[in-house]
Length: 471
Ligand SMILES: Cc1cc2nc3c(=O)[nH]c(=O)nc-3n(C[C@H](O)[C@H](O)[C@H](O)COP(=O)(O)OP(=O)(O)OC[C@H]3O[C@@H](n4cnc5c(N)ncnc54)[C@H](O)[C@@H]3O)c2cc1C
Image 1 (cartoon, rainbow, N blue to C red):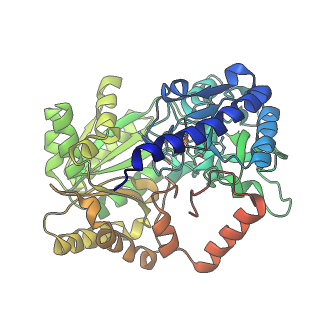
Image 2: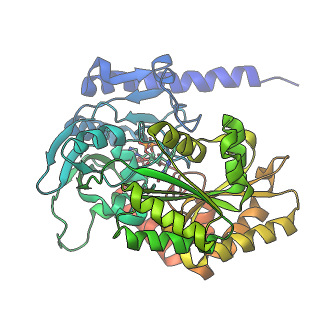
């Protein structure tokens, strides 16, 4: 039999190369020589969380909104699809690219344009990292009011495009509630300039909200006006061990009241997570915390209040153990246990879910799920971490064998009770490529149809991050 495979592969690659080489000249005319990268100049970048992010092998780095507008008009005219990328820290495959696509890297647009310390607002370009912005606004006694583990790399544009949540969302809301105004380049090259700087702005349909959480499928976010909040000062960290999640939630509400709504963080970790992470990092002194059902990190600025409250909770038996960090080194150790990915390293073939459950049902949900998973397969181990303050759980189901082969059965159990409890199947990481089945299965059909109609209306040629979110 004739072997065509050798001939077929080079032909396909050659065809793409010829087409992409042709684009390089046109793209260089728009962006200048330094603004276009191909081949190893692209793969030299850190691909980020998803190994497929840089697979397109061709990237542009614009410096201005006008360049993006010209670029998009070109892409529209030749039907070249675009994959916007910020820090590539997204966790749902939304920034993955393939051969024949063009990556739009936003890092060259990272200017902080104006901090208004009186109005508590900032206008910033989309490629600015969260950490850079936070450092800048702190100089004015302000904070972005949003924080997440990938702060050093995640960009404001990427966080808006994924409607990121993080550790302070229970207080200040996710990105959707931080955005006052947006500048967006549409798939036909028009620029929607809506850099409103006020909280109250009733102008009919709030169009900018469509782009928040759209994961690059409707347009390119170039600038944003964000709300800021007063910076509360250096956080003091307390770690508590609990035997009942209901008690942790009771303590959370009590701390909120005692701190007059200024509690900074309330982060949950299951004992299994703590155990694996403590072992991985050799932090044996923290091993005692893994002997209880869950742990919670609470943060507040006043050590006296935190100590009094945790002391009282211990006396009442609301919590089983507690420690308060004495210095920044101890604080960093606690956060390393929470934020590092030791569990994923220990179980690389586990299944990940990012869901929201109302606090009143959190314990019932986790207890119920763990029983049902064990009856599905006694070898399944349920781990969770989460932003407890807003009921956002990151669940992983692991075993000594690849659990990913059991996605259908496991995901059915994870999702089946959520709607009954008033929860949601996707909390803060977005849909991307990973959660399209869940979006299809869990969404109201009319809502889904409206989403499809909006996509067709704004991007009729389908050049913006095709295949993501809606498939
Ligand atoms: C260690 C770690 C901890 C994390 N913790 C949290 C957490 O607590 N809470 C949370 O919500 N997320 C968390 N994440 C996920 C991640 O940080 C967020 O999804 C982040 O918002 C993505 O920003 P990015 O700049 O990296 O975007 P990318 O990953 O580059 O892109 C994500 C999506 O946004 C689109 N996009 C990027 N820039 C633009 C733009 N300018 N215009 C239009 N579309 C754009 C992309 O096309 C893609 O669809 C974490 C990730 C890591 C690695």
